[in-house]
Length: 404
Image 1: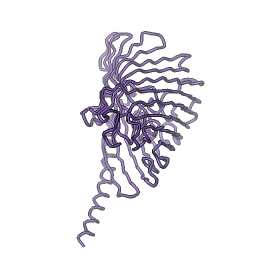
Image 2: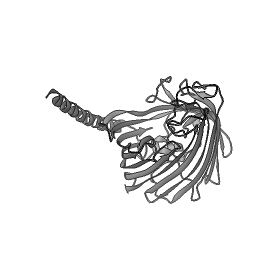
Image 3: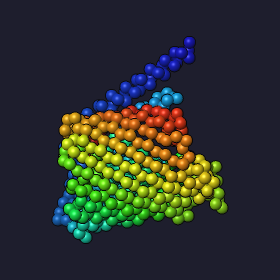
């Protein structure tokens, strides 16, 4: 009798917690909306004199997530997904700098997660030279700000856990030609890889943990916009016919400085955290916008190897893996610039998966001020998680976004 009563109490507590989380999210969203200025996401200039200026801004992503694994009871959580203030400064007519950090993402050896931290030189026509921690030119979805995504969470093609870098520390070049119809990007930088066999997590060295493998990464990217420049932002607010076709390459080599799980060429972690030797990747992607409809599609293929060529664990089979990521996502504005229905389908395969990992997503976005203030609902159904047949789950995401 006691066990039955206790079980009922636990179920009731879960329902109350879930409802409380949703109510709190709605209340906080309403408060933020009432106090938010209707500025653009370009920030607020607080000082300007000649070429010198100081601008401040940031973003807050408040998220509620309900996770329902098929074989276990559901769990839910309300948290700050992102809390990123930034400061931008104009130093001279051709030099600027930006510092952005995430106060919601610190973990392990890092209390804060450094995002953009760079100096930009724009004194050369059609070319910018950037030195510091900056976004890497691989994956259209990564190059699309987290603030400007249609689905609450990125798909496989934009997930830094599976062979796609986010920020890296080094030299970056950006060029725009033919009235911005042609854009070229290139990077050579330092990047760290988490030696964890179930994923290929690539981080900036400024945020890496002490056991991450160190090395040098290069990447090149070409974006062609035949009908005029199409910004890296999902959703169609302009309702004009635009399209983009993109290609990108990446490569990384371990420099041998921090291989903590390898001894005389052998993995000492029993396959759980094998040191990564190298990886390379190829991307082809595209986007389309017209009369409120938008589609983004991307495929990237990443090949990686471990130092010990006998490792069979996670994504690796005999020290090798090829990760194939595919995603198509899109939406349609039912009410122009206000209400949008969205959906997506994505797959991931790797050498040591027994089944292809699949995700199907659908939901809606309500835009108060385009991507600067919006409420997002995404329901994502996952099949064969981690490549394990029958390992299925459902995520329900509700997220409020505000940025200045």
